[in-house]
Amino acid sequence: MEYIELQNTLPEAFKQQNIMQSDIWHQVFRFQKNKIYLIKAVSGAGKSSLCSYLYGERKDYQGIITFDNSNISSLNAKDWTTIRRNNISQIFQDLRLFPELTALENIQIKNNLTRRRKRKEIVNWFERLGLAEHIKRPVGKLSFGQQQRVAFIRSLCQPFDFILLDEPVSHLDKNNANEMSNILLEEFEKNSFGVIVTSIGRDLELPYDYIMNL
Image (tube, rainbow, N blue to C red; front, side):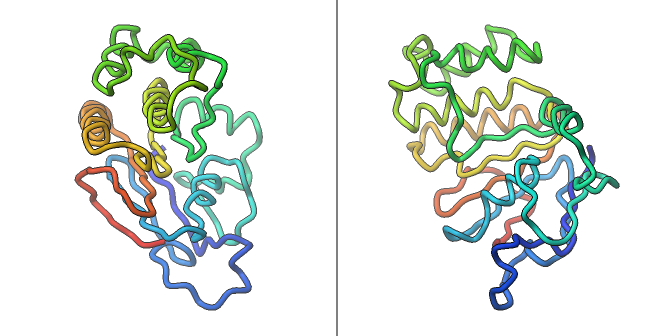
């Protein structure tokens, strides 16, 4: 997948509102592979909705969204399974971890399917993100910020052309947020993929190619 394009896309919930000032909604905009994007938004502007559209979880929008030349409205469940496994990774705002499983087990669920990362690499990320002593603790007993870091590691344990990060540092201190940025940039330099970050305040520190208001 080389690009994601929105053509006059707008959430159905917004269609009765007055004209919106947005760099994305009701515009023609293309997210390119190998570029880094920051989408700034106030609460309720639809940033999580946008991520849900791009991940195929919701279809309540007007307009067209295409992956390369394919309208995503034509994709079936099997297509989306393939895309989520090979083309798009996401850190969800609500994280979607399994609270009864350990931090490492949450990672292994995905990595055992993809065989993307070696255990040594995963453990190194745990150490760099200050999670080494929590690797065998149930996720439900970790703070939300710690869980965000676990979800970040999980998101890297698959191949992808684009990664969606929905408010990835909302509960992180500066040091851990910076280390997350460092790891993501290292991966970005080794692999060609697009990065789409959403924020309502605190931003992931990255060399953004585009900064837009939703």
